[in-house]
Image (cartoon, rainbow, N blue to C red; front, side, top):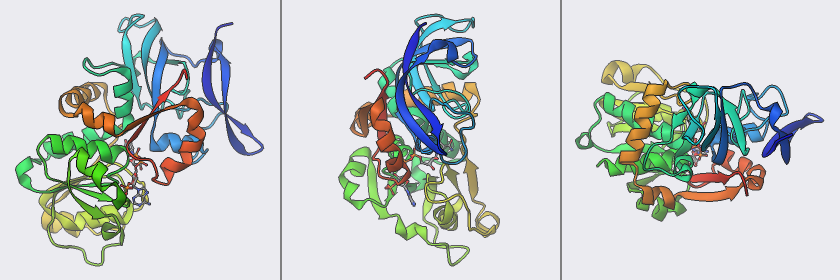
Length: 330
Ligand SMILES: NC(=O)c1ccc[n+]([C@@H]2O[C@H](COP(=O)([O-])OP(=O)(O)OC[C@H]3O[C@@H](n4cnc5c(N)ncnc54)[C@H](OP(=O)(O)O)[C@@H]3O)[C@@H](O)[C@H]2O)c1
């Protein structure tokens, strides 16, 4: 019986326990394309799944990993042939069905995107859901009129995955980027990625005391949520927008409607998981064009599958810098 190696989560005495095991290929979920996986990565949501948090996974045993890159092994879809290089992000793979922390996965063909020319499997996973989300946020801000001449653009959670790629993309596109971080010791790292200025995340973290503050940001990409997002709304320039991507600091929003009514600002929601396929392909093309690969390399570390259980609590505590690529065969 053919088997593949995977990091599998089992529920034992109410605890979610990770182990690397050989898994029978017959247990793969239904789908029309089977992919031989080269690499995956670590995102905030993977940290939650690995820790058994947020009720994201129902049946165990489960193979996590919300992203993967690899090569088509078998296909019943006319859209893919054996040997095609493909990537997958989102669609609740790695949560509602088995994901990328394995040498093999089986998914619907419509979930797959052909690996963009100009990027290796490892580079696509260094980008992964976090970088794809940062790109969607930049595109949304541009659609709402943001241009480099508009003024300073704020990125919160700047040293994390979404933040690091957002800083790199925006600075490459000619924006003056202000990076908000709780890790001022990473000044050199963030400056190398393209941040023109750093601010301490505590300066945005208190619930706003006034409905409007001085107009400061021409645009913002927020990975933090909570009072940070509420503060950003009070500081956006007239008709400027914030792209809300994350909840690393909380899922509440202690805000008033006054910035919308008096300054015409926009709160743009960003969802990478169910994003339609056409938009995905366009966003990956933009990443090929706009993300400097030397900066991507600088922010990326590669680890084996066996490191994931130790890294999961770290990403949830905001202790991971940039991006982590996972080699599934090592
Ligand atoms: N909308 C979507 O489709 C989508 C897709 C991907 C990710 N996300 C969300 O985006 C967020 C970031 O994901 P990620 O993969 O970039 O995670 P990450 O690598 O852990 O980055 C999050 C960053 O947020 C900052 N942070 C952490 N805890 C904080 C706190 N309590 N208060 C304020 N800032 C805090 C830290 O940056 P500093 O050390 O620089 O302060 C941390 O590095 C997560 O909430 C994730 O769920 C959403």
